[in-house]
Image 1 (spheres, rainbow, N blue to C red):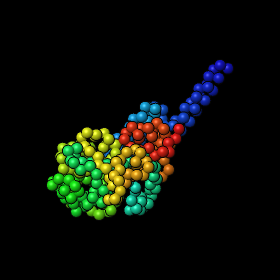
Image 2 (cartoon, rainbow, N blue to C red; image 1 turned 60 degrees about the horizontal axis):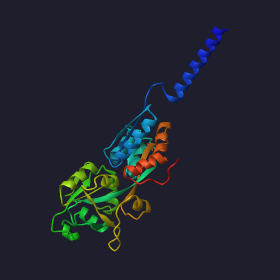
Image 3 (tube, rainbow, N blue to C red; image 1 turned 90 degrees about the vertical axis):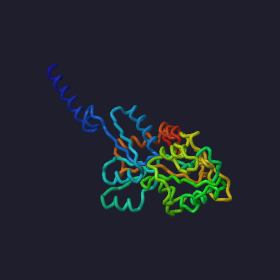
Image 4 (tube, rainbow, N blue to C red; image 1 turned 180 degrees about the vertical axis):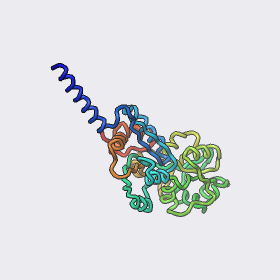
Amino acid sequence: MKKAKLIISTALLAVFIVVQSISLGNAGEKKSLTIKGSDTMVHLVSNWAEAFMKVHPDVNISVTGGGSGTGIAALLNGSTDMCMASRKIKGKEIKFAEKKGITPTEFVVARDGISVVVNPKNPVNVLSINQIGAIYTGEYTNWNQVGGPDKKVVVLSRESSSGTYVFFQEHVLKKQDYTPKARLMPANASIVQSVSDDQWTIGYVGLGYALGAKGKIKTLGVKAADSLMAVYPSEKTVSSGKYAIARPLQFYTNGEPNDLIQSFLDFADSKVGQEIVRKTGFVPTGKSAS
């Protein structure tokens, strides 16, 4: 009788293990999640990934940058599970996705203010959207055209694969072309370093990068119109909508997220996840879960 009970117990245990293996994956096997895209979001998403993996040691998350366009392209060709984007997906990208049977699904996870930055030795402290646009289209080429000294402006921009490049072009340049003299930089950190090294440069970076580089660069106040007061980018001014150059940061998945992706999204939206947003220098969405 004891032997029979042992056989039955062993059989039941085997069935339980098989069921668990089917529902959770093979025992001891790590689950993986790849996230690619926006250089602006790399630091934030890496912080999320690190915190998430501490709670879920069976999960391995890979986070790489390259720009929003690169991330969206990776999602559309199936080489990433999620893409991070600091701009909205474009109509032509959606059409391409439809042809491939892919359904890009958007999740806004934070907000960002794009900071316009100069060298701390530059006496200019405030510019209007119109003045910034004139500098970036090449209409203005000298700092004396915006109240500064007689020095040529060195224009720094992100590369065209960057979501920040696209957003800045749409909202500040009013969809005009960048000046051909603009130096295209591969990352926020490259712009920070160049602005720190050259007194007469101007660049734009995510709020988190501007805060992290305090002392090395100077963030300008921005006037939404020439007649209005200047507003500086901060959590408060971005959240309230007072700062003119602000945007959502989002993830895109192919259709509805699977259990692992949904768990990561829930973590990003949680109070802990949104506190990481704040500590990384971005702005919480205000919709955090418990």
